[in-house]
Length: 58
Image 1: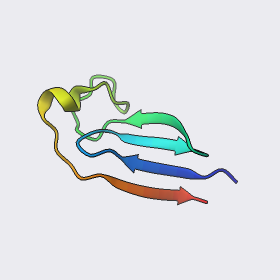
Image 2: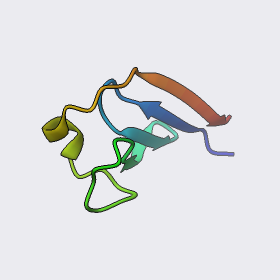
Image 3: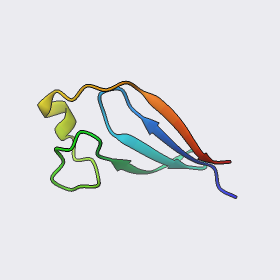
Image 4: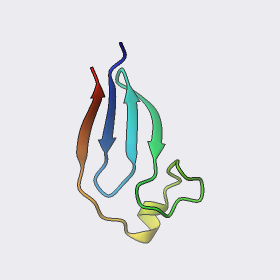
């Protein structure tokens, strides 16, 4: 089974990784024009959030 992780970057998007390879960058600031994907808006609007790692499957 694949190892799926979500790595929430400090002040940035949620990076979904599958077996260590980035699969998608998901918006968590709410400002992206290409939701649910990140388009970099977090940097422009000054989004602030802590980093966090979540293991979905192992």
